[in-house]
Length: 385
Image (tube, rainbow, N blue to C red; front, side, top):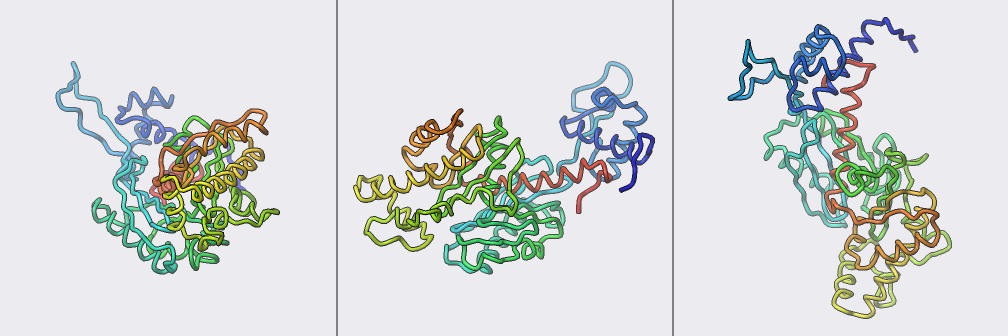
């Protein structure tokens, strides 16, 4: 690694560019005087950096606001960060739907699109439905595919860093799927693939119930529940990306599967048949005693599994999403269970984002990637590719 010194002019230029870009992104509009005051840089330095950012397409000079004039001389030149210089996609691939959300470089959502898909759909069919949703979203928003700077993807399963699904039992033909590689054929920008519960945890920390907490567990409840965790505000994936896979806890001496717990007939429900589960929940809400007993068994298992994860990670907040967000009475039993074992029990809250959590988390991951490129001191501030 080359040795950098304080006198390295190229390093100083990159640092100055990053400082100015940060300042401009934090304001709707800024004058050179305002940027100079905020950054502490000299006026000539700021002028040179701003001109370079204009050449890179990241900053634009804005006309003075109508009706506002200075008492003396010409109006001050005003500049803004060009959030429209590029766009980001957040994608969700689920058992019953695929979804896409589009934003500018500030993370401002410009549109969303989803498509229903059957749980038995093959991998090719599921990905084709996703591509159709993306194409429709871009068409409606009037955004060219070439304008995309990064794409984030949330999917069930244990995901390798290269976007390969190492293990994915929730979707047919998903284990071993090179998902990142497959989706990269549709985009000329980085494609970042993450576990769906991890993505949802990131979303809740960004725009949901966990905005003020940095140690968070998000539970995405389903027939094979999963969890995502933030430790110190950073996503914790674990050594092999399998952190939070509480859906496998029943294997540790408890062979009764969720499909058995939710059965009202003595025979297990079909594997991963969420429609069958929805019918059990509906019967329970109508007062059916067998269905109510089944939902209670499932809820108790979920409570125990979440409590085990909370004991291991000691979070400040546990966020419940997925099915559990609609389960009556799941929060209080969980609070009681945590109070029994935790020195300082975490707060427990329902997800604020609902079904938007996964695609919004995937969008945030894409935005994080772009920001790393924009504000990297090691490189120049240009459009990531």
